[in-house]
Length: 426
Image 1 (tube, one colour):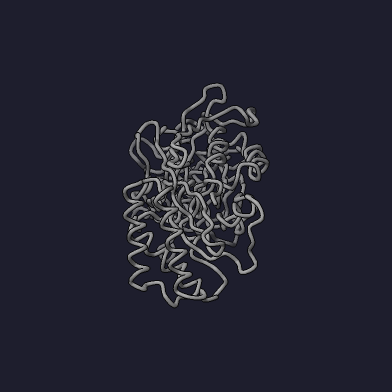
Image 2 (cartoon, one colour):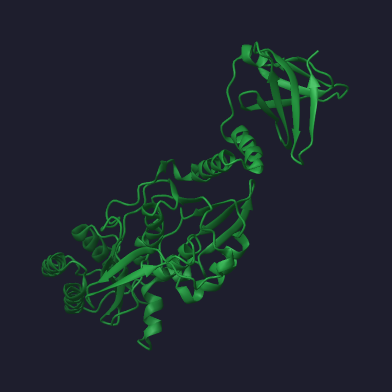
């Protein structure tokens, strides 16, 4: 029984709640034979499919699957399939005990258990400092269930100066939703070929292009885009990343992804198990290949937990280089928090002293600041050369100006609202 093809997460196919034991060894032999035939007929690589089917039958003849309960059998067969093919999209899991074949849609739900982990995959939409849009996606769910959320998310993000799309926890999903979100990142009037998928059972290739079936007023074809990845990023999330990277439309930041480029069909085996068999492969129109087995290699490699901070820094720097005043402000604050400038005691000492209405001093290796007359001192953090912020306060930046000989002559105080004041060194 064939199910709707999709990109799905590698880790999703080994879990099951049942511990029932199969009735007898002949039941196991029969279902392994049925599974082997489905692999022969449908696996995207026919020769490897034949070898894999023969391998499973040999393992069955040797008694490797005898006496296993359904969960154990699911895990063992999945392990054998992946070891033989190195294809992480292969999976085999037990159906619920009360399952009965009713409709195509019932099987489709069983074939893609990620659908029960998140209703639509959209986890977080936010506007960060510097007018940076942030979208966290944990799955590219079926287009019909994801369309409204996708359009709503892009409406909220419209007008962003830069866009960060977080796929670090995204295990995959459906290419139609990849296509929809990608369409917002290009000119709706100029279709772009994103990817093609070849399917062996039908011997057909489907092309995926950007389209104007979106809220075109919210398209962001010229906004810098950053995509965050991890080793958990898989399948359709990899397609999204790979497509944009090959088209020079996004900067990928994080870790190399999982390496799964084969969409699957689900096949019901003996009304007891569902086998997820890779039936197709991605073909990028630029590289003529895909990311199977190698993953998407980021443009900027950082540990996954650090990817967001790295992307924010990159986005702010790009916007600041374009003359964006808000980004210039945000970059200083970001650097102070994430990568402060380390100065020696001698260098810090250059700033200490009395100014018109401000004073600075060195205390315990820190540069301290206060308004004259204020009893409280605050620590200063060096964000960039001659630029400091007050620890715990984002609304003020202190820029030091030097004369032609390099001697500090005044403080220029910059306020977030745009006001500027001056304090001359005494």
